Image (cartoon, rainbow, N blue to C red; front, side, top):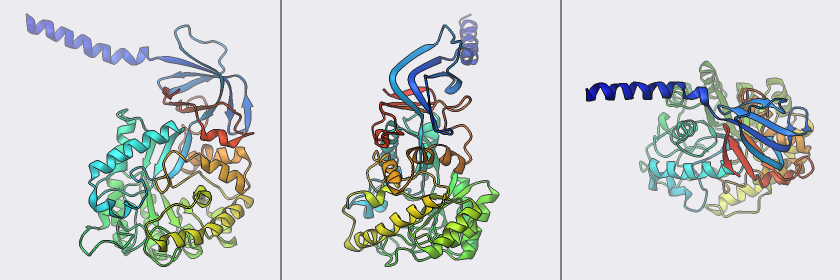
Length: 427
């Protein structure tokens, strides 16, 4: 008798779980106005009807009686921002050179959880994490799964797994040249790969374990022990093999690239984006427009006050790159190259990401163009069709500010309201 009663209760419980979506909360967010990023127009009022985490109507004539009202009459709404170049598990500083051998994956993941929440509360509801994981673990893949499962407060995360690098190249885990031989085990599994066969294996391994984008170092960089800051580090054949293999899996490739030769070779290989693009020339611009390649300039790095680097050689390289970065971005803006928003946060403190907007405007963009880099441009670059606008059918990823960002772009540095998938994160 007792077992029969328990069985009936269990069946009833399962029935309730099945019909719960039918009684999902409907939210009515009411604000002063919202920015239509596609047209560049402010629309009044900014009333958004949300159900199951999606926008179902904007400024509706009829509103259900049972809605949950969120009234923000002083706020201007924008779509959640998107940063296409972050490093969630990194807090760069003098200790970073030893992080790979002193910390395990658990510690790296905990740091990633903390930094992800910082970015979300700063208004970034989608981020692309471009490498730097601990050991052979896939920290950013785990963070992405945890975010989508609602276990942590974090943006939607597009993970890259381990970034690909040639042996001793810019993204080799021992890129500072500070470890004795055999201290740190590297292989194609951790992204260190040489030759066509091995880079193909490295791409496959990252995708097998959950990478949704491939990051690779086409050239040398500032924050590594190479004397060069821009020498090409993967051959043309290796670059083409990386992109070709990624394309088979419908995965895009993001190429870290400072030097002109490596930038142009990566574009010709078919990468989706050039990260930094510090020394682009007229040929680079012609190729980017021909191939539809995006530039992710990480411009704020060049304007940010000098920081303490691991050693003076790295500091000298970083300072050497600054004027090239400024000139290259100005040239790209003038030529109407497709630009997506990316900051390299982790190299500087997470949470300062929105300062990139003022830098883009300073380089020559109109405020609406700068905002588009972090909304529709980033979404189009990644072929994401449900984010980047306040639009019916899209994720209810919405932020609020108190000033018109078209008149004061710096207001995006002080986001006061954040909603992700219809859930209020910051108010």
